[in-house]
Image 1 (tube, rainbow, N blue to C red):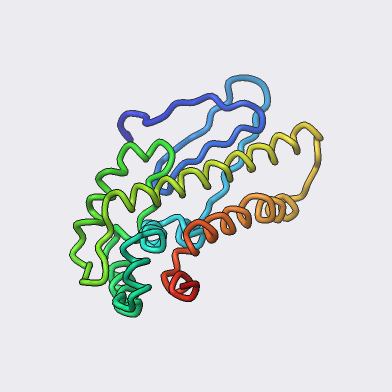
Image 2: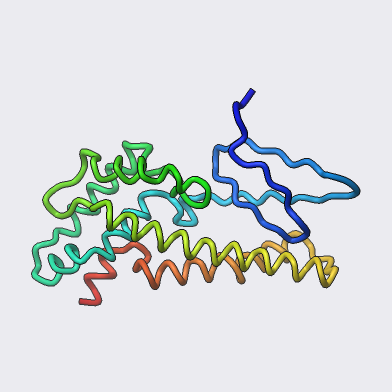
Length: 198
């Protein structure tokens, strides 16, 4: 039906598994009573798409830093090219290849580098994109650990939280710290923010 399984895993109480968008999946209980929760995260809204990966690479790029400092980086043109690419090419709207998808990241990174959108301002290098991917992998990993701790704490305390309170707790303790960390490490991907600091 769907081909070979990419992953077959047994989760324990409070465990969390990230399944990227577009991956068919199912849960089965081994024995007794089991409850699973699927939480859908719109990756564009949560800055987990390749456009944001490119922006993170740009905000961390020594070449971009140098060109901003000497006034030769056209931020407006860079943003126009990236906006056009995001509108026209699925590649720039795709999920960042995190977790078990990282094995396929090389193809994504080469496609970004070789995309026919880059002008004289800057073309990301594979090294810059790998560095940005490392930042995302680390910060999302930390967030998933936070989510797992949060879930284990609720299970251990046998807390009966309503759905709304649980989602607010996830937002406050997992999502907001992820945004803050990415903002600090990637200038929220904003080359304008980088230029404003120089």
